[in-house]
Length: 345
Image 1 (cartoon, rainbow, N blue to C red):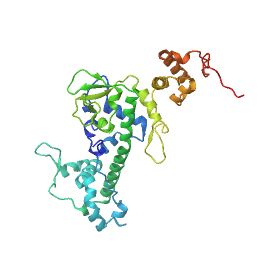
Image 2: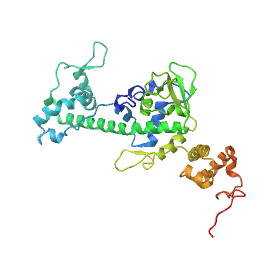
Image 3: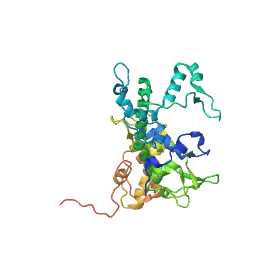
Image 4: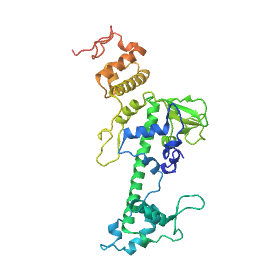
């Protein structure tokens, strides 16, 4: 199997508890993913990641369908849906939350210490939950919780493959630099862009690890933890996120539309310039005869004239021939000497 189901991946290990993250001067991959997600996806909640591995939640009937106008249960609805609803919020869980919120003193009456040192347990733990014991308030909260879990699960399943794929693209395009550190400690090694030519980038993002001897495999036994170099990280991530935003709302609102702020403009301009230089370099290596300003302008896309000219000046140091017989800044290059210009008779 080339790719694994998103729900089968272990998102809990690195994304449920930040205190488990390894300490390093570089940015741990899970940290980088969550930072990029806030720039790229709207709306974003870190809980989306772990929720992606939850089982799909059914659309439960609401309190209006489960209770008569006088507040008495609709028996057939409770018999059919009560056991499912209790899986999302048990009676004891509901009563404990209500006791703490509304009557803290009742906690001692409802719960007793666990003799084995575990969490407090209900004093009537031997009773079994029955569908008809569900109050209207309990039903409302449990149905809302199930709907929220399903909403978060769906959001995570949409967002995580997008984030993982774009993170891999940033690695391949060399917008970000990655290092790998041996699990258990050791000297980090630089990763090559081609190490991210993987079939299943979500699996790598979930595990935050790789096998250094099989760098393009996402199923080989892990040997190294993955980190991102912090230099220029925020700006490069912001620039890329603006190219490929993901809107989770039907209204199509992106992070930029919602006013999510990025790094300082000067950092963003530098990141745009660096990206333009990389794209010009890649283009000229493959197409050395296509070096005019219009050629290079098409390659770099939508950047300001100032960013384009700065990038062109920098790439001109590596490929000086692009300025031979050049023209004034902002103009196309004149034809080289000796080349005939064809005109209509």
